Image (spheres, rainbow, N blue to C red):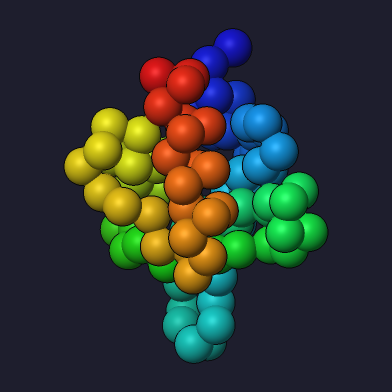
Amino acid sequence: MDWKRKLREEGYVELDDLRIELSLDNTFMDIDYIPRVLVYSGKTGRWHVLRNPIPKGKTLEEGWDNAVKVLESIAGGKVKPDLGEPSVEEALIRALRRRG
């Protein structure tokens, strides 16, 4: 199963020493939740939140699809990930590109 499908179906995927998870955020107490991508790095031992904008979508499912599209854009080199930790950003790019 490819990483995009596994991420959408199971909510997480493990690539190298990274665990990528789909999550929801309601930080600002909006009526609707917004999709988030979380990345756990085994090297740092911490979770990192992908700060790139993810379009909300009309449904939760569409929001998840949009999150995966952002990761696809990162894999394709169209977008640079913003995780606040350059080494984890580079590891994410390498891991996604290796898997197409």
